[in-house]
Image (cartoon, rainbow, N blue to C red; front, top):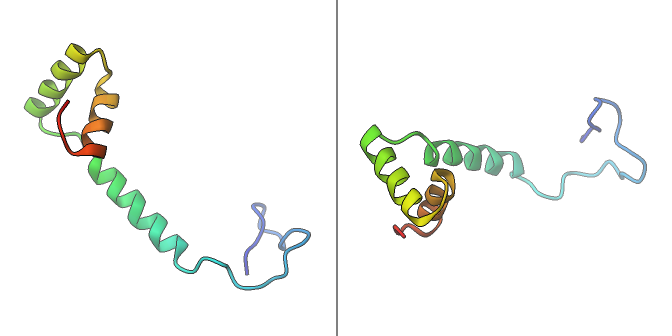
Length: 75
């Protein structure tokens, strides 16, 4: 049974039925694990190369890395 954020009973209008999205917790766990792995700090040489390229393009390191992770190509 789903509880409200305070550990009490479900809120008004809840029919105490099963969750509509089975497996949502597992998918959230897998996504969080993959997200951590993708944003893991790369070796120093790679990080410096990304930083240099990001500065040349006028982007932050994080923005450049996000594009790289999203598209899979260097700008």
